[in-house]
Length: 149
Image (cartoon, rainbow, N blue to C red; front, side, top):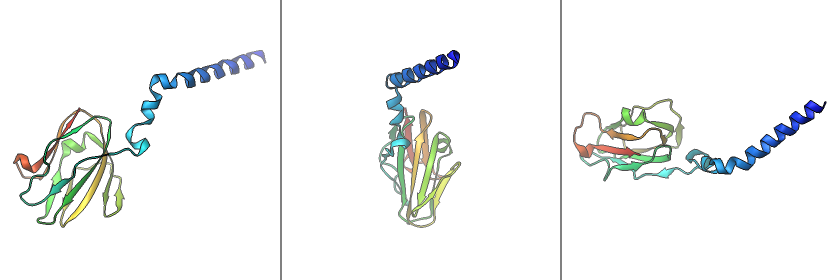
């Protein structure tokens, strides 16, 4: 019986110690990460329009942060945006199209047959430079560059 009460007291002390040390170990910082607080950082939208640049400037992102990106097509042409290197280095939480939330296991590209908006929410996983581009184009204006630090 003495051994059980001693074990219980030791476990209780260990739990109290862990609770007391949690703020010092960064517990608060972990609780403030993107998805847990709904704190997605809204990025400047990408606009798909025939002959127009996708983005005004490169996007500067941080690994591990939660972002939301609107991709809008003006309907001037049937256009797609692809970025296997981008999509393989982010975790896509959801893609919202016409108030329908899609939670994909993976994405390679999005294609717009008409005007509309798709909103992608994602967490950057790995540092590097990644692109979203209109397939079959080579001009720098036809790609959006994401620099993840």
